[in-house]
Every structure is written in structure tokens, then in C-alpha cells.
Length: 398
Image (cartoon, rainbow, N blue to C red):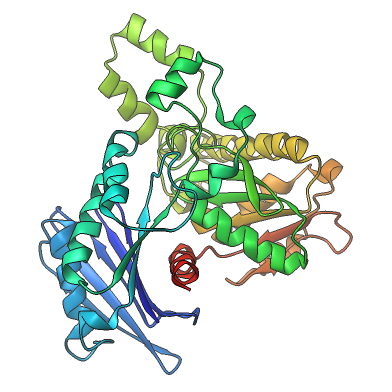
């Protein structure tokens, strides 16, 4: 069964085509800088254990135009992988926000689209784009099932005492003010891989997703019971450009005493903070380079970054009443051995003991990097959100 996965961001569109239940994709691609000068598409085909790529450049005005060009690459020329759109049985769409309505993969109907539309205000950079890609895909792959997989769905198992804020109930009932959580597809995928590795399902896992956006989730027996991102993707850990947790009094103070507008404050905490605000760059590789040159701001940025993660590990171990495995994933989590070491240092009281040699030897596949006698497994697991979306679509249809 051919399932095309579409993962759209505010100015990008990633895609992968799977012949399910095979895990390896037939092809993958990336449409970058949509609506911005310098637009391009990179399309990669996997054949006989080899990969072949083609790049196309030229202005792409919107996601609809980008998806039409993707269809041409899938069906035409040397790098074609299907004969026509009818070869696609289903299109799986990553949708960032599902509110309280969706707890799993969902066949898209007019009512589902209506609910996605109603949540535009909660995810203004993503849900409108996700919605547009659904509409274009419906017109492009006419005979395919359209399926939505929501970033928030995995966190729908969080109990009320964890998802409610300590404000009057009216704000929850009337405005939906609560913890929703994000990166759910990634946390679900890596926690399932961890359960297989541990060879049991009654587990206590802390999953740490460290990319440009960062989140940490407490998972008991395969279900999310708390997560660091909340109503929106700003709270919790320090990120590339987001501040993570900050005392709301800071916002009030800047508004009252420095005349900051709401827009300026949103820009400050979402786009000018985190690694960028403290260390001078949102890219961890740049921060590492500056640290090697003795840059004190970059050194502080790394200390703050690791410290925030350790605080959450302690808190989540408490609510789980123990921990079986600590999982690192996503760009920084998978590729920065120094950050993994910094996070795990001085956590031996929890039974978390990292093996430095195993840590630095990680090469891109699921790996155990704890000492042999560590009570807690420390795992590095490459996330695979596109496959997880395809898998959920396949299960829904079967």
C-alpha cells in the first residue's frame, strides 16, 4: 500500500512515500523557502540500496504550488516512482494542533477540516498551512484516503491534574486554556522503540526531543502523562530561539515599565531568546564552535540548556515514581554527545550513569549508551516522524 506522508511547516514541506508495511521509504523530499526568494526542491529516490537525488530551484509561491511540483517529480522523468496519482492509496498529513478533539490518526472529513480550521488561533503558523495542504492533496490525489495525524494526539492521555492550569475553570471551558503538548508523533515513536528494546510494555520512560524546538515527556506504559510544552510550543525547555519557561511577571514588568507591546514581547520570547538570545546563535553547532573559542556567553548558554533538561528529568522521575529509560532524540539529542554527557552528569542518584565511550561512539542507529551496571538505560533513538505517520495511517486503514 503506497502511503504519501506530508509534513508541512510555515515555509517548508517535507514528504516521504512508503510502500507499507515496509519501513524504508521509496523516496523522500524537501521543499524549502516557500514564498521566499531562493525556493528549491530536493527529491531523493532509493533504489537497490542506493540513493539518487535531483534538485530544482525557482520561486515557489505557496504550499499548493509546491505540492503540485512534488507530484510532477513523483510521476514524471528519470526519478519518477509512481505512474499516476491513483497509485497513492492514502496521504498522511501531519497536523500540529488537534485540540481535545483528536487522540489518534483520523480519516479527514468536512467535519474534521472544520475542527482543524477552528484551531487556527492556537497554531497560527502551522494549522492554516496544514489545512491548505489537505485541500490541495484532496484535489491532487482524488482517489486517495486523506488522513490527519496530530502532534497533540499522543498527549491526550495526560491526566487533568497535569493538563489544567491553576486559573479559574471558565478559561478552560470557554477558551480551551490547558496543556496540549507537542512533538507527540516523535515522542510516541521513540517510546515505542524503547519499549521494544527493553522488551516490556510496563515501562517508565522520559523522552527528550532536542531540535530547534525542544520538549521532554514522561511516559508510563506507553502513554504520555506529562510534557513540557503546554498551551503552545513556548514553555518548558530552552530552545533554539524560544525562551522556554519564564516567570510571567517578566512580561508584565516589560509592558508596564518599558512600554513593550504584545507583538514585541511575542517576538522576544519566541524568536530572540533561547540559544540565540543567550549564546548568540540558534544553531547548536555554532554555539559549540564559539565555546571552543572561549566565548563566555556561549558557555553559559550550554549550561542553561543542560540545567533546564536536568530539572525536568528530576521532576518527571518523581511523577513516574522511578525511571527505566532516558531517551535522547532529534537533531541535538541524536548528534551532540557533549550535551548528552552534560545532561546525564551527576544524576547517578537516580541510577542514570552514562558510559563516555559508548556515548561518543554513537553512529546514527538505536544505541544504549549507559554503563553496564547502570540501573537506568540511556538510549539514543533516531526519530522518524514520517514513518510513524505512515504507520498510523496503515493501522487505521487495516
